[in-house]
Length: 388
Image (cartoon, rainbow, N blue to C red; front, side, top):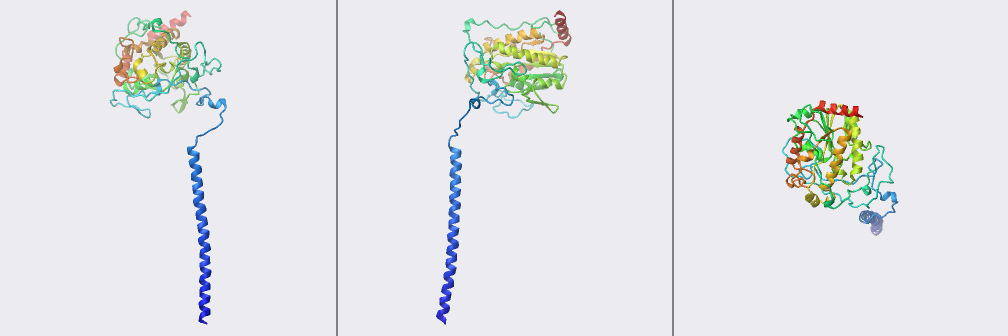
């Protein structure tokens, strides 16, 4: 009897042991499968991350992206550099603090320098709605580089008359006037690129409205697909900002980012922009400013070999000509930056293009002492209309 009970007990323990072995075996199989699946997924993930992406691209896929405007982007100009004296100022901001004294631009993107002579790379491109040619990196029709000895020296525009209610002659620089208080600019607007940003942030002149964007040029300014600004809850282009408020004065400086185009292309774009500004602000004095020169040596150090003072001088000839043709006031802002050699003095710039804090102060001081009486301006404009 005892032996039978012991046998039954051993049999029960054997059954339990067998069940546990089965459970353990199943658990081991599931664990092994889970580990294997994890390792497989990990290997596939690493392979996807580390292996080069290879795909068959159509010709359209290899073209530069068009940023939503339907038009390829233009070659980036010096506004890829940070216009502020700091390396990375971040978001747009207003500040009354004393800024550092030197400007540290970001690295610039290389730009193709030598298109085929006599070829217009944008000839086969459809014109934009505003009449300007598409802005394509391959269509950067650079300045024709002729030997220095064949260049015609740049002649700064003459000043005409004196300040006050003297009759103004378009195409001549606004003469020096009595210094105005900064409240004079309360109802003024400043349009431009990163150098206008520097004027707002570092010159000490904070009155008025400032609309600028790094990389802005005369073509983008009138492009309604490039609504970079928000005014009164509306997204608008640079010229579109003028439809939201009536100003007494409009200050415009653009051209440094257009140095990749020929003077003829720049003249066409600037002419369209001026017509748009005059139509939007018929009761404002429009001030068109000449572009300050470049420090060629420093610009070359920063990889901007295609930026040269001689090219800026060519564009300034266009500015003077259009100021006369469109009958707008001409400010020779470049005069306060032109050194004895015609270049931007090295102590006023870190990258050859943008200014130090002290340099931006010169600009503001020039604006305060070169104000055209509105009566003289509109009298001259009306006289021009009668002559036509």
